Length: 441
Image 1 (spheres, rainbow, N blue to C red):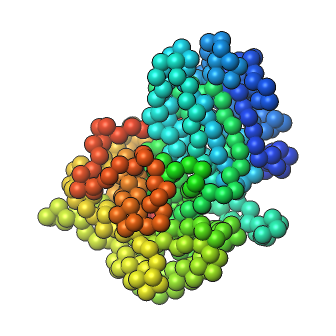
Image 2 (cartoon, rainbow, N blue to C red):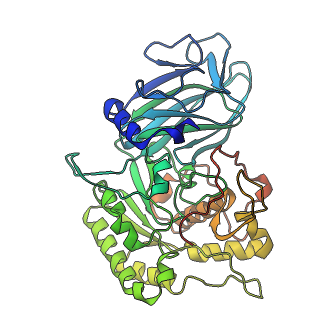
């Protein structure tokens, strides 16, 4: 793909030249262009000089049904297509006109590293519907309140290919019949931001078949009011998150009323007793710092691994880290999402065999360059990440936390004792695939 081939340096330059603009109006289609809009055609390949365009134009086509310049034509493709814009970091509302004045459409929209925004969105015959999503765009520069550079996040080598560190906003249009008439991007400075910190079970995973609950969470919140900012990364512990200045990035962005979700344990647990005192100390320091900044810290216990005993019950492989987090939440009088307990119920309900369908368990050659079977009992596929995201939302709703009022109608009552039917789970795969296991366990 073109996107992965672009160098990090070139994208930084592109961002410097064009990234100060924070609003765009793009008319997708042919040569007929709505007044005040930028024309985007099937030949609009991403270009550093314009700062926008498609990653790959090989299968794009446009259909012109006449009618208005804005909604009478659209761009579509038989495979997922990706539109990128050089834009400064921040929160943005993206308004999409989707549909076909002479047909139907079916579109799934994800952004950056497969962050779910719209899922299986359908329009009826002749319908054009306007939908808004709210997206957090980030870069690796740490800035003070004046916007001056004061440091950098220490990215791992593999992160430099990720779509969420590249100084671009990338929108993925996917599904059976995606038909895009227009894209309008506007800055959103009022949305509450939920910052996610954690490891590979939280991170926005770029490659199929890996996924997490963090990248599914935006789908369940009302746009414009709330935005999810996922800063989790594979393999991280609380200490590593500090050492790589990931938390410093967040400290310099948190505003009063924002949220800080904290989920660590999987990787911290591997270091045994020597790290436990540091784990507790850092958690308390993060909580106090968030409070000082006027933000709201929320602890999330780590979900269980897929390890069953002879009675088909989940075995605790996380030592006493979940209990430590529960105790700290109680001591500090802050909210706790007990994903550890919810995942135990979820996995035991699924059972040893069916639970494989929520994890990365695939026979050899299921994906490109995958000569051996994948059997990972820590990391999730999209279905597993989606079910765990529902557990997170369920906890918010059941505890009547303040965030409850921002939960969207996409969330229906969820019971981990009755998981969604995996056969009915909708997830058209992205083009990015990799069999390499994420960092951490």
